[in-house]
Image 1 (tube, helix red, strand yellow):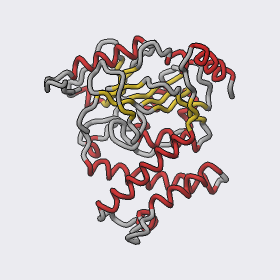
Image 2: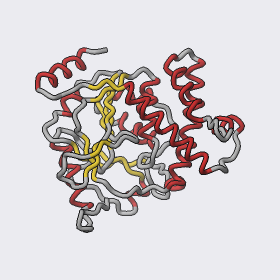
Image 3: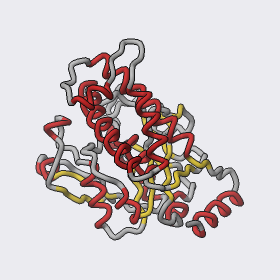
Amino acid sequence: MARRGQDGADIGKDYQRVCVDSWIAEGFSPVSVNSEREMERGHTLPLGTTALMVKNDAESLAGRPLVFFDDMLATAAKSGAPHIAITNADVVLQPGFDLYGLISALPPGKAVVAHRTDIARPDEREGTTYQCGFDFFALHRDDLARVPDFGLVFGLPWWDHFLPTILWLRGVQLIDFGDRFVFHLLHDERWRPEVWRRVGMRYVKRLAKFVKHERSLGSAHAAILERLLRSALADPESGWSMRRMIARRLPWRYDREADTVLLRVSDMTVRFIDARREIRSLSSGEAQECGRDEMSTAG
């Protein structure tokens, strides 16, 4: 991991240690899922982290041997752990939050979905909430079977839109604990705009097909999302429609128009998920205990 401090010096190794230590301190057992090719190239992991390898990688799409999201979920399902937390490698957890205890009480059918807070220094705990996506998820292992394969990649954009959307479509209740507990040191993006566009097009095409199928089976959730997705895909000003291109299987030649539509889909998705997350404030020990009791007896 490469990260720069305020003086420009590389603090990536030290910051990675801060991240891993924060997970372990909260009771988690960190697992890194890596491709065989990545490990063969000398990729090393911090102490306290277990490595699990998968054969496939997305180097042809990402330019790096990143892991397909479906392979990561399949690895998690085989781990035997009753609960799974998914986050990026550069995330720090708030100490003393008892996040592990809360997640351990999650029954099937409930999942945690949280935004991160961007910070300028590793030790900061005040910052700006990142509103363009999500950075922390936790769910019961049984709910992993509800997630289909969309060909997305962990480490590239769009998987964090895909996961909560699919969970909600499949009837999983989305919750958040209200307080800021996920922190992320600001850095330059490592993916290229053309990769964001290419993966976004893949996601939108497969999501459109998926919601159409689910709606045909009588899913009221899918019918709601299909209407919103249709609206986001159409561009009434120019008459250009990504939805029409999807239907006709036309080549993607309109990058600027595609970017505009993909940004609308991204914004719609985040607002859609945020409106359906149940916020459970943990401002006091009493509220925390009530929240845990409710989760342990629900569903």
